[in-house]
Amino acid sequence: MMTNLVEEFLVHVRHERGQAAHTQRTYSAMLGRFTGWAEAEGIATARDVTFQHLMGFLEAERNRPVTGPGRGKGKPGAAPKKLSSASLHLQVAALRAFFRFCAEEGFVKVDPTENLSLPRRWKQLPKALSREDVERLLLPPLEATPSALCDHAVLEVAYASGLRLAELRGLRLEQLHLESGFIMVIGKGDKERVVPVGKLAQAAIRRYLDSGRPALVTAKSPSTVFLTQRGTSFAHVTLWGRIKRCVERSGIRRNVTPHMLRHSFATHLMENGADLRVIQELLGHTSISTTEVYTHVAGARLRDVHDKHHPRARKSSGA
Image 1 (cartoon, rainbow, N blue to C red):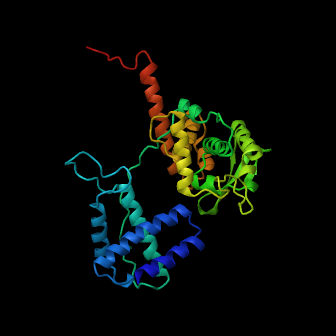
Image 2 (cartoon, rainbow, N blue to C red):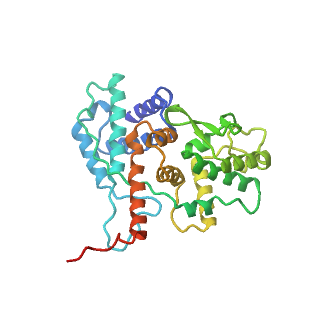
Image 3 (cartoon, rainbow, N blue to C red):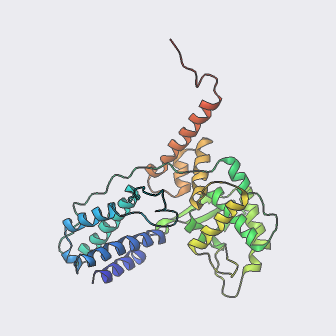
């Protein structure tokens, strides 16, 4: 059964390659779609999969209507949205990783993805909050309840240090070095990096640790910094929901995701003249090309400011 082989691959990804939990979930979802399609096509084992099968599957994926929260509810008569090039890129990456594993372990004689190239992925500029919106979002809570202090500390750390959601969830007490003004972050692939924490974020964490966290701790609580009302570590969706509710309470009228705080961190550093290599190190990016997208964001904002405020920006020369 191909599904059993996928399970072996996911164990390999988790324990031997040390891939991030998000990558593991992505591979699981993507390969689950492929095995479901293969079963419907009568393809029993990984050995039976050919390059032509893969192309047929990807074509079916390309034309699959996008579903999910807030999608597929367009105007009556409108054509359904198709899978984005970014999603297709992830699907191909998952297939290549899986069949490379199968070939290396001898489960298939020939890797059918050998000539399967990744589709070009259009880079979307990351969306960042304005500095005014950040200030509104980071206002101290009116009621200093344990949960409110936790939420405020999460937001301060997310913006002050540019942490991913998974890094926030997994942050442990021993990783805090507030007296020295930094935290040790365990990022993708279990790579460690040192990230500074500003004075305001330090104050928010200390306030939470002194007056909030002790009220949340139970006998079974882990040593993660941020705890739910039940004294447990946050699940991905739970922490996401808490951040979204904080955004709504702040009065910000736009769709804000937790990752936008990370984008705001990097964008505002870039706008203030930070070196790109330093931002790469702070974000934990393996490749500088991933970080370079923030140069486009900062450039676009600078052009907007120039167009709005320079007296000759909008004047034409005339004849």
